[in-house]
Each structure stands twice: as structure tokens, then as C-alpha cells.
Image 1 (cartoon, helix red, strand yellow):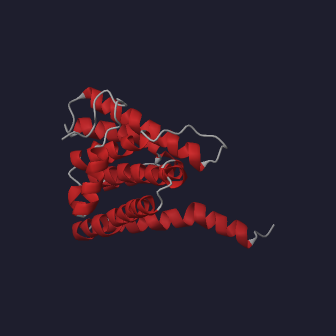
Image 2 (cartoon, rainbow, N blue to C red):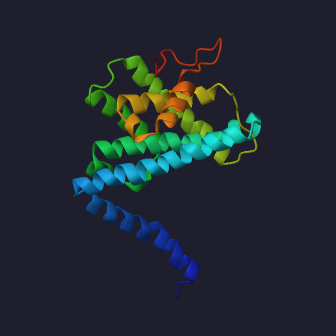
Length: 209
């Protein structure tokens, strides 16, 4: 039976496109200069674009219940997953590309980022490592809770602080502030340090000053 155009297109998207992209990356990581350029000019530029898009809409739309909270979880969740993937790729590009596509989800990668912190001796506080793992699990749930449109969701404005705690903590531990503009870094730090009054959501704050 002859395959229809849509069917062929779906097969390309599922198989051909990812393979082509991976092949390009394999070539890029062989050349240090190209890899450095790719890290800054593509990977982090994508991350910064999403971050600034979220920041701009949040500043323009003061109706926190419409954008700042539930829909914002989608953008913040993408940023959290993106940052975890960037860090793992930066540490070991070949190793990251060796992970099966189906295993490159935040839920499955949070254990790898925890191990990376331990292996590189970047974090000796076991409580913080556990809080990071739990925070990433919460972030994943909050994003999925809205993106799958289940007609209900549990919302709490205080959770936004957790996202920025994770961003600031990971950017700090893996020395990635230099990839951001000063204004972007300051925005993240400010939000991370704005702990909700009278509430302790973490046993130990991830990012502290």
C-alpha cells in the first residue's frame, strides 16, 4: 500500500530529522572552536530567548493569574529542562548524545544532574542535592499539570520562587553566569532571593547570598 504524504512526513519527523540534527552535532563537537561557538551562540541564545520572552510577557501582563502563574509554568518548565540539558551537554557532549532520545526528559535527567554535582564535587551538602532533585520533580509536575490541560491544576504563587532558586543554583554551581547579560543574571538572582514571606518551601535554600 502506497504511503500518503502525511504518513511519510510523520516518519521523517520521527526518524530522519533527529538523526540529521544529531549528525550535525557530532561534527560540531569534534572541533573545539565550533563547539564553543555552538554553546554560546545557539544553545544559550535559545535559552535566553525563552527566558526574555517569559520576562517580557510577565512585565507586560500584570494579571498574574493569567500569565504569571499557570501558563508561566510552561515557560519556566521549559527553561528548567533546557538548563539541565545544556549543563549535561557542556560537561560531556558525546555522553549526552549517547543518551536515547526517549530518556532525555527532565524526569529522567534529574538523576544525572545530581550525580554530576557529586562527581565534580560541586556540592557537598546532601540536603541541597535532595532539595534540587525534589524541586526538579515539582517543576516537571507543575509544567505537565498545565500543558496537558486536565481542566484542573493546583496553583500556588510561591512555587515560582522554586524555579528561580533552581536556575540561580545551577548557573552558579556550573559557572554559567558569563553566558548571560548582566541584566538577565540580576533578574534571576533577585527572583531567587525573594523568598515568600513566612514560608519555608525548602529545608535549605539552594541559592543563597
